[in-house]
Amino acid sequence: MSYLLGVVLFALAILISVSLHEAGHMVTAKAFGMKVTRYFVGFGPTLWSFRRGETEYGLKGIPLGGFCKIVGMTPQDDDVDPADEPRAMWRFPVWKRTIVMSAGSVTHFVLAIGALWIIAITAGLPNPNFPSTEAAIRQEPAVIQLSECVVPENTLRPCTDADPASPAAQAQLRNGDRITSVNGTPVDNYGQLLTTLRALKPGDTAQIAYVRDGQPATTSTVLAQTQRPPLDDPQGAVAPVAALGVGLVPSTPTRIEYGPVAAVGATADFTGDMAVNTYEAMKRIPQKVPALWTAITGGERDIDTPISVVGASRLGGEAVENEAWLLFFMLFVSLNFFIGVFNLLPLLPLDGGHIAIIWFERARSWLYAKLRRPDPGRVDYFKLMPFTYAVILIGGAFTLLTITADVVNPITLFSR
Image (cartoon, rainbow, N blue to C red; front, side, top):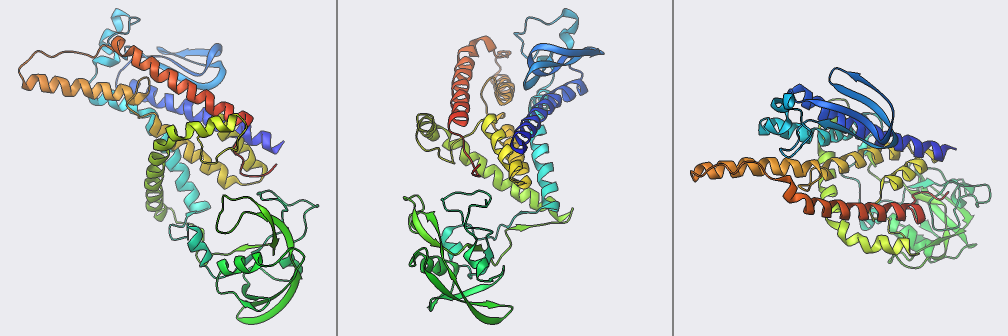
């Protein structure tokens, strides 16, 4: 039930975000005097609507987005009433049209950054100094955090009654203890602890020396069994290995909480990193298409492959099911930021495509004026329709591909 609740909540959050995207277009258009005739949440048959002033507001039967109708978005629009010609969008100055067309993406950025700021002061943002590579993690002191159990398979999931208890907990070890040796083999860091444990077998007895509150002590326990890939090949085949049932407590905190003022700078820094990561992820999208096809046809799903709204909602459901609310909200942040950036790509029918045409017209008019030639006028959108249809076709095919992968072979962060 909690999983379904999470799916519904995340899907609702996406719907609200997209609806606010369209509201951004509508509010800015109205503020500049453009005529907005319709604002609807959803597509398909109208369920309910009302009119206020010159605009009809309402809900439609398919809750997969929303739209607003601004009169005269292009000079080729043939449904403009002669009385509305002075208020047609294409007649307004370039800067006003740019603001209106970018308002949707700006809305997504505001939602993402606002959520990040709240996260920064409540749960904290990732520590930029936290060791991020496997090599750096293994150089950390072997200060342990006890697991509740040892999961026999190589997966992340909550403990069950059938799982063996943590051998470290049975040995009366505690969170924050620093292990210094195992069976007489010195342990200087977490990497050496892993290497020493891998040299043993499940069921072996381990004599453990540790330091607690500055005082050395020893204990012993029988090692459990789990499945792991080789230490030097994380993508290799898993095999049974000995497990102590501990994780690492890094010497630096994984997250840092900020005050309301300091959170502004931290949020800005994190947003900059997120922009770089989003750009890199978008560059890799064409390379990931074969991996998506492999996932659909029975292969393993690469966790780095793109996901659709369906996949994001499923991850939101997993987050709620496992009470990982921070993950839920970070997914919301990431998705809004990605939609905001993607929508600004200079491709029709995206908002970025309209903005690109607006500024192309402006640059061309300026150049022709310098050359003392007649202004060539507005771009003919009809001539761009083949290119627009190609973008729609490719985008639709890619969306169908990701949705199919998310249905038949979804990415999972927790074992259900």
